Image (cartoon, rainbow, N blue to C red; front, side):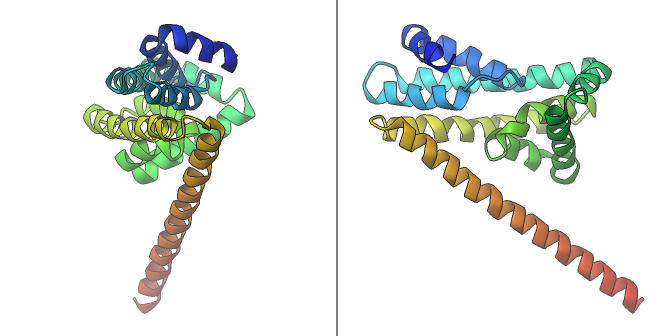
Length: 202
C-alpha cells in the first residue's frame, strides 16, 4: 500500500497529500508521516513546490480534525461503542480521554505531533465531550503545523536518505515524549506530596 501511495504521490502531488492527512486524522491507517517525508524530498528535487505541499498537508489535517470533532459530537454513542469493541482502539480512546481531561487545549496540541497516534481519538473525544470549538481548532491547527513542518522539513533535509529521516523523527519524538511524561509524572508527584503535607499540617 505504501509503495502504491508513493507512486500516486508523484502523479497527484498535493491533492493526494490533502486526502492522506485528512483521513489519517480520522483514524484511517494511512502512512501520512512517510508521505510527508517523501513530499519533502520531492520539494528538494524540485518536483513539488514547498508552499503547495505544506498547504495541502496542513489543510487536509485541519479539515480531518474538524470532521472528527463533528463526528464525535453527532455520533458519540456509536463512536464509543465502535472504539471499545477493539482492545487497541479502546486503549487509545482511554488515553485520549485522559490527555483531554488533564491537559485540555495543550493536550490537543501535543496529540497532533508528539503523541500522534492519539490524535484521531482526541478529535472524537473532544467532540463527544463538547470541548469548546475555538480552543480545539486553534490548538489543533498549531499542532498540525508543527507535525507538517517536522516531517516535510526532514524529508527536504534528508532527501537522499528518507529511512534516516524517518528514524531521526521517530527517535527525536520518542525522546521528547519520554521526557514530557517524566516531567508530568514528577509534577503530579510533587503536587500530591504538597497536598499531603498541607493536610498533615492542617
